[in-house]
Image (cartoon, rainbow over the protein chains, first blue to last red):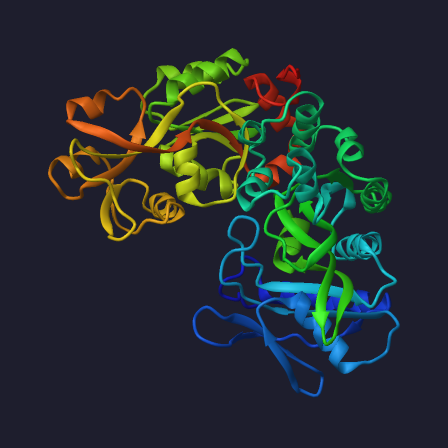
Length: 292
Length: 211
């Protein structure tokens, strides 16, 4: 048995988990596409991914999975019905991702395009996948929000769109500085503090419209139904700019790590905007969490 | 068990007082022992680190939470949750110079000595200025006195050090306060324990009066 440099678990464990995950996703109706290896595309700033099909044809090189896969699918197919693909492989990022500087080198993901599926569907698939890979749902916490919710909350309070600095205060949960800078008092302050510190769910009804509430509630209900714990958040950090809908992160309680994330997005493709939803699993973190 | 990273500098005593007041008796032991760096009982582990290292210990998940000034948080550039701003230790990060030194201009780069090279460069850029930042480890007022750089960027609390070194405040650039900071994963996966501590310290929703 060999140990692959850079990983904390042995390589065979990673490949076994990838393979099991792809098989399980294929059984759920997702078509495996080949998503191999790092490609140093264009100088030091461009560490991207090379996407090829099963025949070995290079389709594209990009620095982010999700927009690329969606555009590939559109290029490949003119059909309008829902398309589901899954992939696994090694990736690289210019910087650590989201937590503890972990680059999440070994990933497993799935995407669904052209409508039909929503975040709740993706969460059902994702939590089923994680269970199949050995994680007990009761050891998972899923944070759920909407990509626009933080901006919408601040816009309501300010009566104009917030600047990037205020949004950053919200992501950092620096509620004292935020309240001070906005100058909000009374009921608005109370619900803002609840929203940022995640205390109760009354703030969602106060700030979000009925449609937004139902979107978030639907996703959270899916989490609870799977046996995991759902938490509604006002804002999550460092999500891709293409996300436009419900987004989520899955955390393992045992090792306190991010094991998966995903959400609803829109990406430009040809002459239209393409709706998609998907999630990516950090395979190494899942294997370690399952062993813990 | 929750692990807390505590700064060994000037914030240590008020932070230990705060922890004791919130019922963490282990803080008293830490206050009496100046050499040990780790204190633990069945519920808590207190880790004493350099102030500037607290963000690394918390963001990397070695500690679930910690106490550190906004200056070190912003200088580190790491993802930390700043869930409670503590009610003591407030000061300002100021641009300082010897009396009579002309103000920095938009047209010309100037030299700036500081313990906060990353934050300093960011604050300079935000003001549309252009500076060569000289990183120093400490006693930055000396850089202005000995003309290593005409300007220094440093914390000012009472102003006593300035007066003793014949420096003046050119501009206040950032209000700095110590924060109770939390690792994002700990906030999610150990939320109940972390929130209980936050409330005990005086932070959070429950400790507020809304008018």
